[in-house]
Every structure is written in C-alpha cells, then in structure tokens.
Length: 215
Image 1 (cartoon, one colour):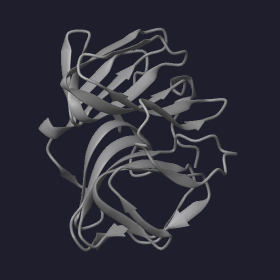
Image 2 (cartoon, rainbow, N blue to C red):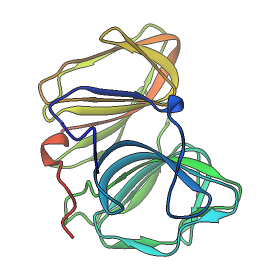
Image 3 (cartoon, rainbow, N blue to C red):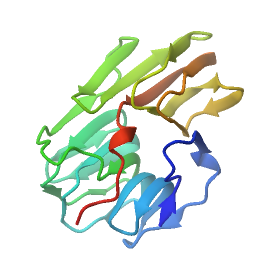
Image 4 (cartoon, rainbow, N blue to C red):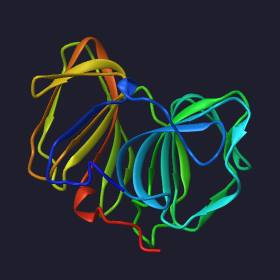
C-alpha cells in the first residue's frame, strides 16, 4: 500500500473527517495518514484503543514514535497520559494496551537504524517552544502559539505537523485539532494561530530519509 507516499508534494488531512478502519487486533482502529507498505510499513497514523483492548507483545524493528492524544496508553513499562511524547527506538519491545481506552498519533519505521535513545517526555512544559528530540536527521518540537501569533520557517528536509488543540491557518487552509500537514523540502511553513491559539507537534528535516521498511 502507498498512501501520501510522494514526499515532494504538500499533504493535508483533517483526521477527524476520516472513518476509523479496523486493525488486525480487535478493538484497535486507525486512521492512516501516510504509508509505504502493508502491515509492516513506514506509517503515520491516528490509532484508537477501545477500553480493555491491547496488542500482543511485539518488537519494533524500525522504531516507534508516538503522542498520547487522549486517555492513558499503557504497557509493561508504565502508564502514559495524554500529552506524553514517547520514542521507542529500533529493537525495543512492549505489550501495549489501554484499560480505559486511548487515542495516539504514531509513526513507525522512521528511525535511524542505530538509534537507541528511548525516552518519554511531557510535551507541554509551559514554554512557547519545547524541543522534544534533536539528532542529525530531525528536530521534533512542541509549539504553543497564542491567539494571532505566527510561526514561519522554511526547514531543510521538509516539515510535518499535527494540531493538538486550537486552530490555525496555513496557505489559505484552516487547520483544526487533529489536522495533519506535511510540507516537502524547500516549502515555506507560515502558520497563524486562531482566536483560541494553537498547540502543535512538529517534526522537521526527516523527509529525505523516508523509505519503505527493510525487513
């Protein structure tokens, strides 16, 4: 499967308008944003766990990065409430689930194969811009804009963002909570927050490394 797999093109999806599609695990549904591959895929998705649902134990050979959007995500390493950012690099394993249900934004097979930096972090630390992760390939940030404030840059290696709360405009489009935007390398990002401000997750620099999983 290929979905939004041309990384030279701007892509915008309002995820709340998408239907939920069942995953192979009962009670776990997803909204696919971009994808290269089938069940083993370089993938970006919104995933919803029904209360009491879980995946079987598995190893992330290509790494897993996620944000807890609502509820509490759980595995044998602990509980991850809404607002938590997690990086599980290649070769890490767990048994994920959610006793009370949760929704996460998750990216699979998008790590450097040698990355072993595993951590969890609260995104909103009260600062306008919080750098969550930075390495030679990418920079990941949480940004909190006040009403009418703009965020403008032309990042090397493209950009990808998810609106976590509030709303904003970009290139004539209105982005609301759950809107996902990807801009190709060389494209300018010019985002202006609406009346209630906007909080968003943003990753830059990573698109030149996009590739199908090597399995």
